[in-house]
Length: 71
Ligand SMILES: [Zn+2]
Figure 1: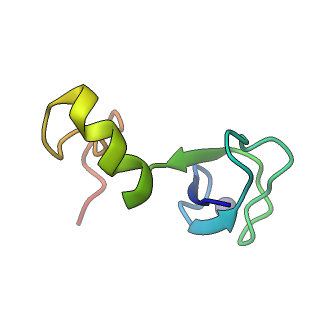
Figure 2 (figure 1 turned 90 degrees about the vertical axis):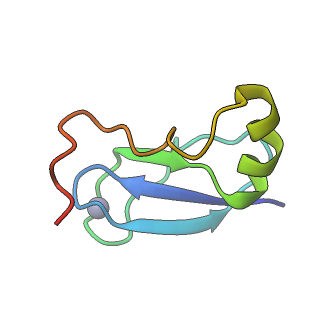
């Protein structure tokens, strides 16, 4: 069973959880704030297989709109 990483868009807490392959964030809640708005992050496991199809480097996952929340 693969380990997936999720990030809560409410409190920005990230956590990892074991899920069956292809499972989504349905039914999951953030362990920090209890919010249900979770975004799946791609772990190293997923990134290593996906990098060959995208071809690009590591600039794919930092796009979040405003982009100025990074101290
Ligand atoms: Zn949260």
